[in-house]
Amino acid sequence: MDRNAIGRESRAAINEVEKGAIRRFAEALGETNPIYFEEAAARAAGYRSVVAPPTFPTTLRAGSDLREGLLLSPGKHLLQAEQSFEYARPIVAGDKLTVRSKVVEMSQRNTPSGLTDVVVIEDEGKDDTGAVVYRSRQLWVVRTAPKHAPGDLHE
Image 1 (spheres, rainbow, N blue to C red):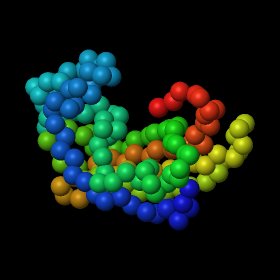
Image 2 (image 1 turned 60 degrees about the horizontal axis):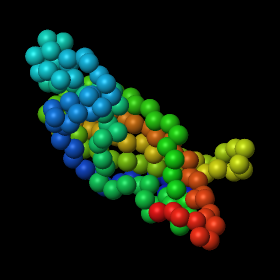
Image 3 (image 1 turned 180 degrees about the horizontal axis):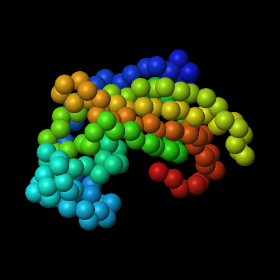
């Protein structure tokens, strides 16, 4: 891992939040609350449009992926261990969110298999006015790829 990556940020990217994307995400979660599907239900509940479920920012992307290249070297791969979200307001259909990622922490933790590299990446989504709508914090574990014996089949 490149420990100099702490503080590095991705390029920003605009993500347009669409009703169809919210509906498909809510369906995949097994949600049944009509505020995720119906404009009238969302408006009756006080929202300006269909509301995105709380984990919806997992579908939003920054302009570059800090996990690739910057954090990994050959023979390493990432495992997401945790993710949390903080909101200033709900995300709704019609939002145009500018998303940027930043490496905020890199450390080593002692585990049963030895020292393990850990990386924390924060995503931030801002609306058209520049106000923060959400922050996401992701904890990634950097693992050594398993070695394959000669003749093993692998992709």
